[in-house]
Image (cartoon, rainbow, N blue to C red; front, side, top):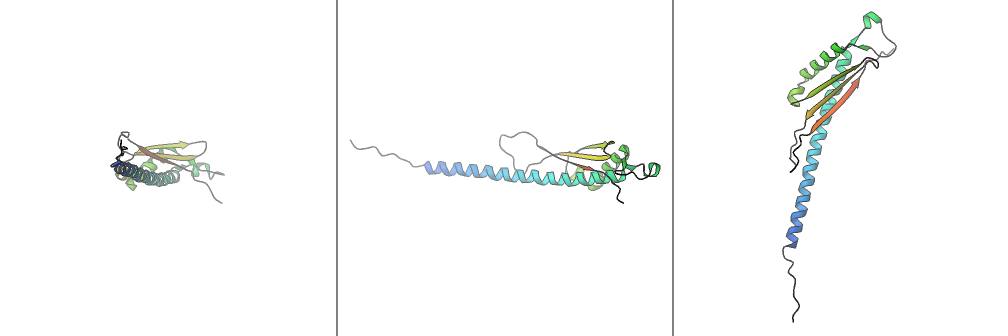
Length: 147
């Protein structure tokens, strides 16, 4: 009886296809992660500017109370108006469709916190991932008196 010879043809093809799929998924993850990072950085920059603008234009009480020892009092309505004006003038809605804004004025800390959230439009879709990702950033600012 002669020994039976195994036929291994086609095994390398499966290995190459498997490695190609792993490489493709790695490329998709890196591209999508980079897009998410860049959008978060853009939102962080926008939140910084909005918080600074709101804290600057929302400062109140200087003429009635004089200059305080530390931070200026923030008037909530003026802060919110200044933040929304800044976002409108900077074209935030055009760059980040569906952007959501939250403005919190802390009377005790006399600070302004602006939080921004926007849907993330991923360049490459991950198969089987149907959730709609959202990216957010926040920034806090206060106006202090320097002598």
